[in-house]
Length: 170
Image (cartoon, rainbow, N blue to C red; front, side, top):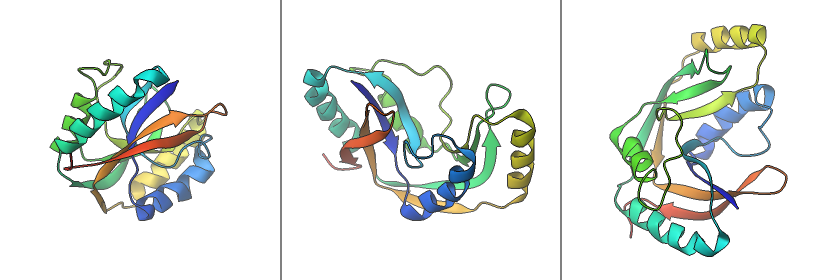
């Protein structure tokens, strides 16, 4: 079964992201706006107890924190993905690093860039137009993060929460 680990920001942040995603993200309906902590990975359902036990330890090792989003950025030229840039604070880096070691295989192909995707799979002209417009808009978002989620993928490609882990609690 395929699993992933992500942070879902507050409803306010999700609403702001979804206002853009519903127009520019073909995967809008598959998963709510999120910050990916660990890319999808395969695990046998029999081993999920071991995974959740380790995730409780990871969550307990990091206190809740605030994230700050102040601009739009892209993964150009690799992909035509547009995202809300989440400042890469120490707590986010620590969570990501802990989820790439021990029982968790390091399946990260690129450097960790905390972000919330708002547009993807765009043709180049549309991409350029949207990036230009969004970069002129100001983003000043602060959000409190006190949990992350273990997700699993359904047969239709959508993702749903398997379990939530509170930060700073063991």
